[in-house]
Length: 441
Image 1 (cartoon, rainbow, N blue to C red):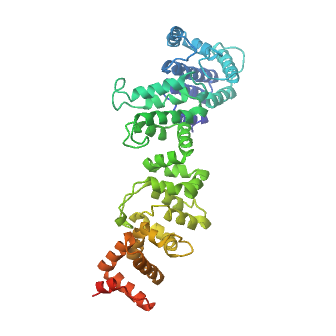
Image 2: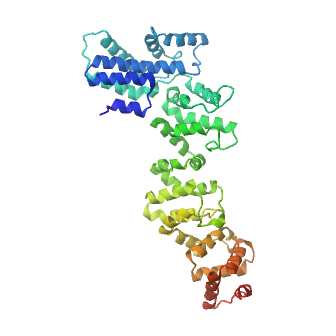
């Protein structure tokens, strides 16, 4: 059975020599060798801090170049690195290298004294509570030991990674992503991601999150990072802005379920953002209404909102009306969505929006945008008497445009519909247009 500290190491993607030393500490703990356990854990933490110093791309602005070079040399010296790291952590403003407050620094000093007790076999009793408390200190503060100036260095690393003068094509990005949490405070991660987004946006014409963008790999690494902290930061960055969210989710539909798990965001999506999501996507071939079509993020989102019961039952009709009546783009329903939408009476809502005078306030001559939906209803679902009467009114009063041409063509090519159309008009004592009579000969 794994200890909490072991699970934490996995969740936070601890790796390399740091992980080896932590694991040795765990092994010693499990057999009751508490002094050895503490020392190995302490060395693991010290090694991690040393690694952050050595791999920092930029030196802190408050440190002179010559002195920074000396620091790097000392922390790489096997005979002095532990003491040098301790001294570096204890540097305070304005010469601090780690961006930690005095409270963390004092606690760090305390654990150094416990390490000395263990190493020099002093009379202090060292038992499992000491190890467990130190593990909790590491878990709580691991990501707070950030190098001063680390953010600027990280941005430079990213720039250089995508510059063929410095980095070969297709080089793995993990060396950058792995350093993010040691370069920037957790509370500043969203700002960092925004800076990276803006940096990418300045240099590329294609959309930043597009899979066609050469920098797409960076976002892929963040989205699929083993660090929950990074994944959460990405989610918080994306969801703060409607346009940013829509752009992101359009290229990463596999992330929709993750974002819909945020109840507040999910409600904002289906009550406000869904219409803009439809506007963002490329238009489909309207003649394919209710025919087989490609999946799109917005329809995947609609499907999950309905199937996973995210929308309250008493608000579903409002949602269906909203996605149908989105301004300027009635849209197509992908073939693989028809059964689901039919079960939710989506097409009844469509009928209500188009044909019910209470809900439809659109002038007759402005209904052209609905033609392909009308055609879909007629061909796939059938049409009612009152709806035919409205179509006849359109046919007579607006003898031009998409509805007129489409209806005229349908009456010409679909005998079954033409027969029904004429029968309804006769049934309601409405004179059949001479042009339609001519088609029926």
